Structure formats: structure tokens, C-alpha cells
Length: 195
Image: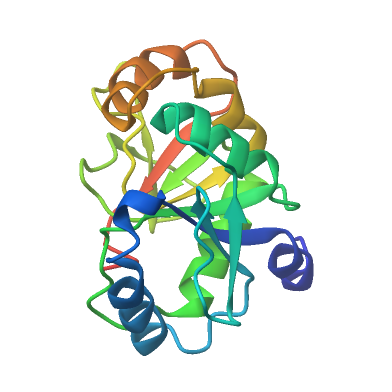
């Protein structure tokens, strides 16, 4: 069993955004810290040129926006950890986030050597796994196998699946097809972990 400390040190929270949505950031982070006040991980915000003025948030400025995928790739490449919890800026958290539930999910993802673990069952996983009743496997041929819901990612899997010039919707549809050719399995929780 891996030590939880290692898990803690190997995860970053990333909010993928761009300057066009800067007006949403204060609302996003107000709710984020209201419902997850004890978040132990470093929080990064992907931006173009604007820095979000909050000492708890590290703005990663990547310059002009060319496409969603190009910007996301540049931001993810700047993150120092092997695992990411990726959220989009319009996913407003509505209920308390339990840090130990996130940590348990991260530990499972690492032990299974999975590439992705969705924390909201939209869509649900396709089948149970013996290791844990809390998560299930997403079949290779499932539509939206890769959905940009709140999810834990192995960073190098995200970088393998993202393609220059694509939109977030392309990433879900075309990235799902591309995900069938990589060895890492994809998982999803049966119950919502981040509301």
C-alpha cells in the first residue's frame, strides 16, 4: 500500500480556463473554498495574461489563446505533479468536498495504474471492479469514456490524448476514440464525489 503522504505530494488541482471567463473566477473560488476549505493540494488556474489575485491560487499564464487544446496542453505541461484533479471554471462546487474521499480515489487510481478517474458518474461506469465498490471501470468502447467532468488524471495520459487545435468537445469525442489505443484503464466513481 502506498503512503498517503506520497499521494498528497503528487497531486495538483487545476482549473482550466482562459481570460475570456475571468469574470467567473471570483465566484468559482468563493464556492471552491467555501465547500473545500481544507484542500491540502496546490491550486493552479490556467489563464492567458490575467493573474487571479488570490494568494491560495497559482495563475499559470500561457499567453494568447489559439485553441482550447493548445492552451490546456501548455498549462498542464507547467504542472509539476504526476496527477491532476482537473475542473473547468464553470463547475461551481455545491456541497462539501471530503478530502479523504479524493485521497482514496487518488490512491486507487495509482494502485490500478489507471489513466483517468471521473469523480461524477455522468456517465456512470460500465462495470464493477473487485478492488473497490466505490469505483467502476469505463469500457473501452463507451461513449464519453473521456468526459471533462471533475476527474483525476495521470498527467502523461492527458497529454497523450489532447490534440492541437481541438475544442473541449473535440477532446471528449475524439479523445474518447484515442483513449482506446492506450494501455491505461479509465474509471469512474459510482457516486458523486465532487458535487
